[in-house]
Image 1 (cartoon, rainbow, N blue to C red):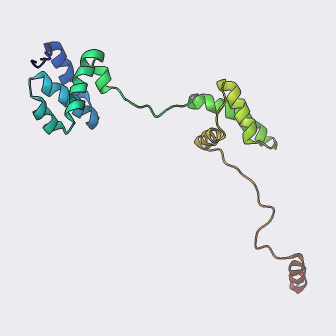
Image 2 (image 1 turned 45 degrees about the horizontal axis):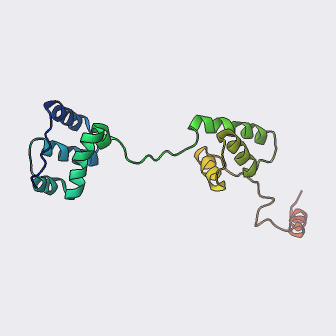
Image 3 (image 1 turned 60 degrees about the vertical axis):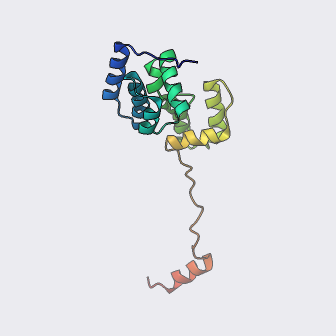
Length: 165
């Protein structure tokens, strides 16, 4: 069975070279290098030696480029920002609780979670609320009732009697 030759057009070669010039990510550069080497007619063996990729992956990159275009090669595969709301929307939800806290009311995570779920429209985990509160520099501020090394009442009275007034 004869090998199937993949032919790149001049426009595709120019598109790949232009993407390589503007690219700043080293992993994306390796993927683009596979495409550019295959476009100029390099063999698969030479391509995998220079890029360090597996032959199967190098072949799949070329196939993906022809099926989905350059964006499939350059675009991010994983997105880290899986939030339900933007930072400003989260701030708006939390802002009402900050005002209540300034008035002296006791705010619980349960209340914040209920308001957040009402805004989002679905249930979320309790840990998610703590991540949001940490992101917005929300801290649990609770005053100590007294200093842990505070002297007893008898010692305080004795020291008052010893001072000359």
